[in-house]
Image (cartoon, rainbow, N blue to C red; front, side):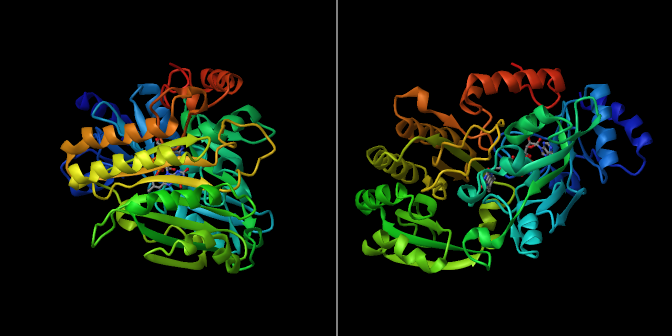
Length: 461
Ligand SMILES: Cc1cc2nc3c(=O)[nH]c(=O)nc-3n(C[C@H](O)[C@H](O)[C@H](O)COP(=O)(O)OP(=O)(O)OC[C@H]3O[C@@H](n4cnc5c(N)ncnc54)[C@H](O)[C@@H]3O)c2cc1C
C-alpha cells in the first residue's frame, strides 16, 4: 500500500515543488513529526506532508480527495484518535500557524496549528482572554471545534461558543467561508462537531477584556489542598457542599493522586476561583478548616493557569483520558472509585502517575444564545481521569480500572450519560451530540458536506 501512495505523491510533489513530504520512516525528522501525545495505538503513516500556506493545504486536500488517499490533519497532535497507518498520510499543519488580534472588535483570528498557550499569551498582551483549555500545547483550532471545556466556561461559555467564523477546506478541496450569513448551518456544525466537516485553516473567535474575570489584572486564583487518602470521606463531604454553592465561583478537580517524591496516595483539591482573588480564602474556608497537610494558593495570570504540566503535556508515553459528564457529585460512588484507584496503583505500579479525578464548576456554562452542535451546556460535573502508564502490557488493567470507575460514577440511569467530544470518539454518538433533532441536523449536514467520510465516518455510520 505504501508504494501506491508514494507513486500517488509524485504528481503532488510536481504541482507544489516546495511542499515538504517526509517518506523515510527511519529518519529522525520523520520520527519527530510522527510523535503524538499518546503512544497508545500510535501508527506510522506512509508519509507526512508539511504545507506552509493555506493554498498548499487546499491543494493537498484536493489531491487527497481526487486520489482517495486517506489522511488526517494534525495541529497539536494531542488527540488520541487521529493516528493513521501506512494506508494513509498525515497533513501536518505545524509549519502554518499564526494569530491576528483585533483589539477594537474583541476578536482573534487563529491560523493552522497555533496552540492554546500561544493564543493565551498573544491575547494577554492586549489585556484580553478567551475560553481556552488546560493543555498549553493542544491545537487551539481543534480544541474550539470539539466543544472546548475551559477554565472560564461559566464566564464565557464553551470554546465552541466563541467561534464567529471560519475558513474551511471541504471534502472536495474547496475553500469555504463559513459565517453567520454565508453558511449558518455549517457554522452550527463547526461549533462542537467541526473536526468532522473539513480542515479549518482559520477560526475567528470572540475575546474578552480582563475585567470580565472580576479583576483588571487578568488574574485567576488557583490553589492546591492535599490530604492523605484515608481522609477521603470528610474531604468529599465538604466538597459536596462547596461544589453546589453557586454563590461562590469555585471550580477545579478533586484528585486521587500519588505525587513524587513520596508517592503516598493522596486526595487533593486543585482549586480555582474567579473574581476578586482576595475572596478565594473565604470560598475555600471549608477546606482550610479541614487542616490539609499542605495548602497553597495564589492569584496568577490567566494565561499561566495551565503551566507546570510539561511532562504530562509532552508527546510520547502511554497516556489517555477517561472523561464523562455527570449530573451530580455522588459521594458514595466517588468513595468506591477511591478503592478502584488504590487497587490500580498498588497492583500496577507503573501506572502510579494515573490520577482519577472529579471535575466541578459551581456555575453552569454561560448560555451562548444560539443553538449549535455543542450539547454540554447543562453539565458542570465530570469524571476526568488522567491515565498514564509506562509498561504497554498494563493497558488491560488500566483500561479495566478506568471503565469500572466510569460505571460506578454513572450509575444505572442511562438517560443521564454524557460523553465529551474533545475526550473520546468511542461510545454511542448520541452521548456526544445529545437530542435527536441535533443529531439529525448534524447527520444531514455531514451528508451534504462530506458524504464520502473524508473527515471520518462519524455522523455517517
Ligand atoms: C494535555 C491535554 C489537555 C487537554 N485539555 C483540554 C481542555 O482543557 N479542554 C478541552 O476541551 N479539551 C482538552 N483536551 C483535548 C483536546 O482539546 C483535543 O484532544 C483536541 O482535539 C486536540 O487537538 P490537537 O490539535 O492537539 O490534536 P490533533 O490530534 O492534531 O487534532 C485533533 C483532531 O482534530 C483534527 N484536526 C487537526 N487540525 C485540524 C484543523 N485545522 N481543522 C480540522 N480538524 C483538524 C485532527 O485530525 C484530529 O482529529 C486536552 C488534551 C490533552 C492531551
